[in-house]
Amino acid sequence: MIRLLTVLALALPTPAFAHHPTGGLPPATLWEGIASGVAHPVLGLDHLAFLLAAGLLLAAAPRALLAFLAAALAGALLHRAGFGLGPVELMVAASVIAAGAVLVVAGRARPAAALLTPAFALAGLFHGHALAEAAVDSPVVIFAAYLGALAVMQAAIALGAMLAARWVSGALPFRAAGLAAMAVGAVFLAG
Image 1 (tube, one colour):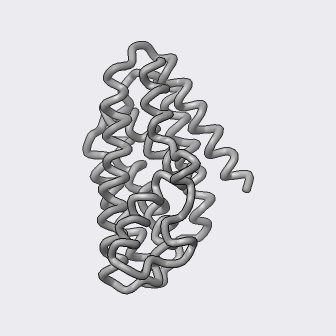
Image 2 (cartoon, rainbow, N blue to C red):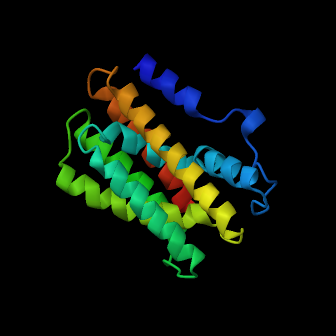
């Protein structure tokens, strides 16, 4: 449990990095697009909580990460094209709660990949749509750089959590992580 908490604590942003790299403005340069893509999954606590919880579940369905990333790209492109997906932030919060709930119920057991993969894809659609907001008005090349960096960072966080899970024994740490994810999701759901 100590190892898992240490890894998770190291993944959280420190105050020195807890700011938007472009001061809240859309990225205007290639570098800003990359920096924004790297920063957003870490600075958005709801997105970070989902990625960490998802990573802990990935041992059961490693391909679910690809489904999440592909759907996140689709969600971002839909946002860029002007298509709304309804209550995006509500769905992001719900996905965090759902991932946490699966951890609480399953513990260290492996949920069925047939269920996780479509669930991760659905979550990815909403996370991608929400995360695209930061760069949706940037020029195409900068938006592409943002999306590339975003995908790499999301994969790194989820894979890091998956690898950290291998060091942990017993169901309690997984259930505790699930409760933490559910709490984060509930805070974002409340507004």
